[in-house]
Length: 114
Image (cartoon, rainbow, N blue to C red; front, side):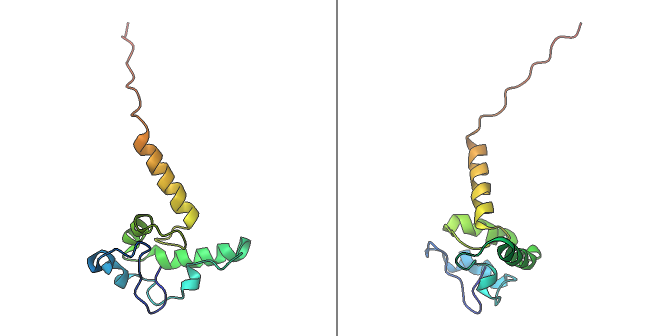
């Protein structure tokens, strides 16, 4: 998500111009940042409505994948990025990290036919 009318600065602040060029093509460019970042103590239906609105903006974005990949790579802890909430990104990262450590399943041997 990009704050209205400003160029984004990744949390790491080390990204090159080429690395963040995708953000210029984002559908959210110029949208209110409050749609993508929750106010303090936001809960329940208000949060769900705001997140639904943000996802609607993200769903047809031409740079959805780049945005989604950016958030964990840059350590973005808050906001909706690439249509995913903070919680969804944490779960996604944990599940993929877990998959990388999981050994391959054992090969099943077929019993000889009689």
